[in-house]
Picture 1: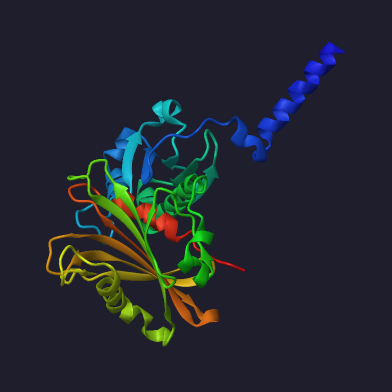
Picture 2 (picture 1 turned 90 degrees about the horizontal axis):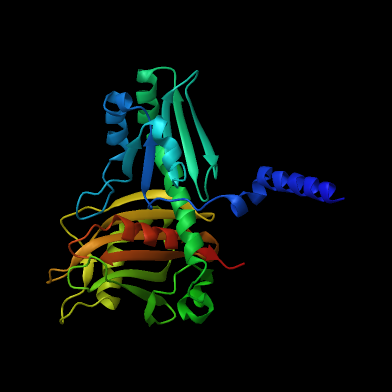
Length: 329
């Protein structure tokens, strides 16, 4: 009887380990920073044209930041040493194989984890694969980081039902509780988080703005994004003295692209802000969402003030919050 019980227990344990829905209960927690990937490839590849192409594609500068910062932080390890670091959160295998392919595997050795295997027949093929599909690979890594950050924020988040503007707009977002209310008029919402670590005078902030505008002409939405945010800045984001308020930095042209968030057509704009007649400045991220059903635009903007430190990860946090927005049913 006892042997039968032990045997049955072993079967159940083996079944649980093989069942994908149970993996989260047995896998160790992954390691690694947001926006960072580990490249697994031989040193001869890393020091040659394959490594050069990886550094070129993944080392592209993030648009809209005051100082040059790469899209992803990249480190490398030889396949012989991979077992020591296989619990990494984001891993890219680059190697030669039978055919040109990109394969994605999740939660293989740890959770959450994404492993991408980029394979080609020869060295030239690997280089072309990274060159032609590098942006696709970056997007896969970035999307997993977004989900990871959102899952953390979801554990302790702001109660959207207590914010008048979100209730009037009929939307919800996953916003961490460390963001404090600055203003909530019912038409305009401003939340702010104080940043301390690494900030020059301890006065850095991450900020969230949410508001709505009538949808007058869908064809001119992109052309008016800068003018709209300057109007909002003058009305709602004052400087330290009269005549000072937030505007789009005039020396830098923002970059706008089109995407979708939870079924809504969205224009993403990255650029730099400054305070008129003052020296404060920093990066911003603007999502102008076309809500045709209600004949309106919903605008989410995040902006960072963090003098003397890198700002990529602060902006990425704001991106994760923005991409959690959903319209109430």
